[in-house]
Length: 122
Image (tube, rainbow, N blue to C red; front, side, top):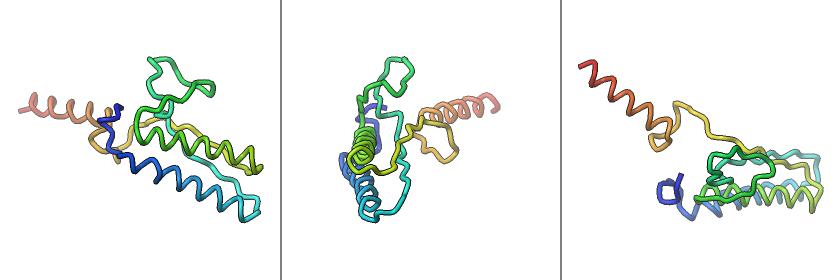
């Protein structure tokens, strides 16, 4: 997804990253054995030119959403190391869902195929 195509704006960056930071701070100040899972995104990797991404692939975010998720990933990593907090990040890859809006590629393909099939049945 290119920057111009993304539904997010630059306001998305502090909204996601500050929420993650607030959660990390809350865990730190409670002094309780809380385990925090940060939901990451494959968009953090950016364009990998078709090469599968793994734990060693550098982040090259290309959208406000990807930048925000990258910031939250590194916040989580830094808090784990600096404050010995149990926190981890899982990088989730896009998946199809009926709840996805039209702008997602799988929805675009399904919508186009449905329109073509409907014309053929007329």
